[in-house]
Image 1 (cartoon, rainbow, N blue to C red):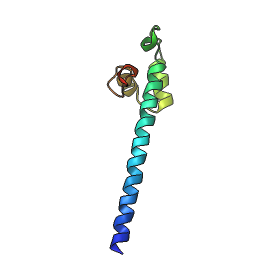
Image 2: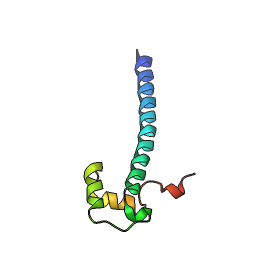
Image 3: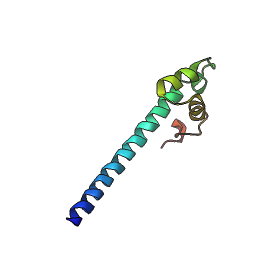
Image 4: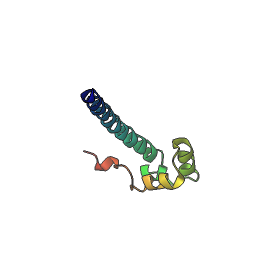
Length: 81
């Protein structure tokens, strides 16, 4: 009986690890989409209200969106291999 419990724990942990890897890829995709929506990162002029709108739609705070914009979170496109 003990071995069944231990095996189940290992199986669940493996599933959790896989889900965390997948979530990491989705998170990076979201960061990329956020950066793509910021005009000044893409050759445009800064536009009032962009960070607030991205924050509202992403569920992140304005401060967190600003950190993504500034490259403090998530890999920048130019940093990817």
